[in-house]
Every structure is written in C-alpha cells, then in structure tokens.
Image (cartoon, rainbow, N blue to C red):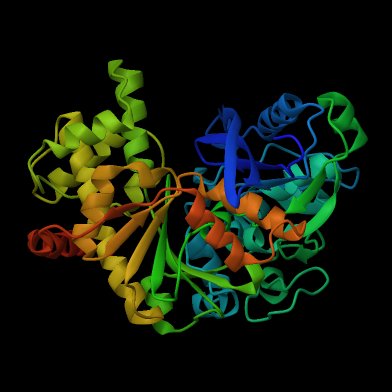
Length: 501
C-alpha cells in the first residue's frame, strides 16, 4: 500500500464491528479487513445499553493496528436512531440505550395523544417505529428527566465516536434523519439543523442540546493529540461520511440507470429506492415507508423489515441452550433440504422484535395461526427465510406502486451471501437480483472519504469503480408461480396477526 492514499472505515453493526482499509489500485478499489470485534451490548437490570466505551476501545485498537502507516482519512458508520448525551464538560452522561430496550413500548401511543400522528409524519416523512429517537427521547424524559435537563449536547452513535476521535460536536445528516426529529421538508442545511422544534416543545422535550446538522463529505478535524499518543498514529483526518450504515451501503450500490432498487441485508432488511425528494402522502403513511437522508441531499425511500434478526436470535439460542454451533451456511443448507412452505410467520410481528426465546416465539405464532409447528433447525430456518422472501414480495410491490418501476434488485451487505434467501427472493418477487458487494457499508464509507479528499471525482465515478472491483452474483426467478398460493396465505397471516399495514 506504499505511496497509495489509504482510507480507514469503521463499520459498526448491531452484531459486530469491523475496521477496513481501502485504496485505489489500477482503477479498482482494494479493501482489507484489519480488525473485527463485537459491538458490546450490556443488560443492567431490565434495561439494555450499548457499552460505548468498550466499542471505542476497539476503534482505538484498529488505529493501533495501523500505527505509523500513513492514512488519508477515517470515517465511522453505525446503526440508526440511538444516541448519547454529553454534559457541558464534554463527559458522557450514561451508557447509550440500546434501541431494543423495552422502555419505549408505550411511548408511541402516548406521543400520539399529545401530537397527532399525521403531523409527525408530514414534517419528518419517517415511518413509525418504537425504536425511533423521538420515542426514545420521550421515554427518557418521562423516566429520567434529569438527563435531558443536564444534557449539553445530543450525539448519535457515530457522532459520539467522531467526537471522541477529534472533538467535533455535530450531527451528520443521514444519521440524524433516522430520528423522526428532523424536518425533511426543508432542504438546506441551516445552523442547529432543521429540527422539529414545534413537535418537541409540544411533547415537553427540551431542545437546547440539539446541535448543527452537516452533510456527509465534510472534514471534521484530525485525531486528537491524546488519541495520536495512545494509538501511535499521526494527524489522520476524520470525515463525516454517510454515518448511517444503510446510507453508506446505498452509496456503494453498483447500480446503473434508474429502474433499480436496493435491499441492504443484515440484522435489518432495508428495501428501497434512491430518489431526489421526499415522498410524503397517505399511501406512504399507510404502508409505513420512510424517507431517510442520503448522499448529496438525496432521499433513501425505504421500508424497514425485520431482516435476519430472527434467524440470528435462533442461532444464538441453539448455541447457548443446546450447544449446537451452526454457521449460517450450514443452516441455509439444512433449510434448503426441508419441505417448502411448511409454515410461515409474519416477520414484522411485534413478538419477534425483542430478544429472548425466539424459537418458542416462532412455534407459538405457528400454533396460534393453526399451522404446523416447526421443530428442527432446518425447518425453523426455512420458515424464517421463506417468510422473509414473501415480505420482500409484499413491499417490492408497494414500492413500485409509489416510487416507480423496478427492473433489478441489488442486494448488498452481509445478507447478500445467503444463497438460499437470495434465490427465494428472486422467485418470490419475480425480479432479477444482483448480490454484492458484501462489505457495502465500509465501501461506501471509504467512497465518501475519497470524494471529500478529491481522490475520486464524484458518486457516479465511484459506483463505476465498485462495479469494476467486486464480483456480482446473479439470481433469476425460478418457478415464481409456486410462490403465489403461499403469498396469499402470508397476507392472511399478517391480517390475523394485526400487523398488516
């Protein structure tokens, strides 16, 4: 990597984090993973938190691994919605709550009694989920009002790590847009951001801790002297990238033309299209789509689907309770040998949202809907994967009805490696699918840094580089008519489970 401009991406997901370097060589992007680590979660009493200091220690280990090697930039991406408070002395006030913490269970209906749902949607364009920052902040203000009274600044998770790296106290646009507290109707970046001040005040939530919102692709500063000394690194620039991991993944989609959609596949499945302006109407509200920020002021119009979370929890349960250690490849192979459409589950049902005893929750759902009870890891895996594919079918159709024709579906992220699910998705949706790159979030992170540093000219050029650099695996519909009857059954199940919106 000598004499090359090398960039470091810190990509923090809900399960794990990774540090990946990237550089251009012979007009291709080369990447190298230098450190992988868990994103530490802790349970204290009944509450779930992110162990942010432990995660930051791993970030510093990544920098120490680099040492004196010349690095041209660093960028941080994380999951959305979660945040931290720092006080007037710049000190972290508490461990950040995990978005799956149960304190928000009753927050949404309480909020709607004070501010009408339609007003919140009209101003923010964001779908309604109990994990959204708005409901987290409301719950914190209800149970621990001293925190909001003492907070000097609110920083989303990547903003917190950027602050610890270089001292900048800003909110990056793509991550702030996930909060349901940002007004997307206003397109310009103004001092202190386009926050929904009226809604927040009506909810009794202080607003003085809200900070400037900046677009991706800005230099925030350089590593602090303390970090340089501790990690034995130099004055590495810190960039605001697309700090929301899905925004970075979408940035890296190797798409051409206009009639394409993306599916960022991991713990969550984010299905959507890249558009120029928010779509805010009754259909979007009814179908619970969302308008999140993207690069260059674009909007990621998408639907949040539960994703591989259910499968991840089952795998963890088999390992902890039965001492069965399955890889996802092994579970996929077991699923492929099972009888098709043995049973189905509504993957977005609230019962599957919170951790704990996921296998029993699946069996309980099947029993309550008068279906066969899956027993083996292969049966349970196939139930999950086929149900996910049918959920994709539902929302690909709705996405087309609102945002236009889809000819190709690009699947990026770790879930793009799942051959069984990708094949199911192609057949269920009747769409051609292109899978890859796997490390889309890190690649997008690096790409924004390269454009900000003028190593790459623009976004179109970077997408061409991605197309030239990583193999894409194609899937085409096979016997799509076999999915018609199960789809009708799936729709009935969703209505029975009262989550059909």
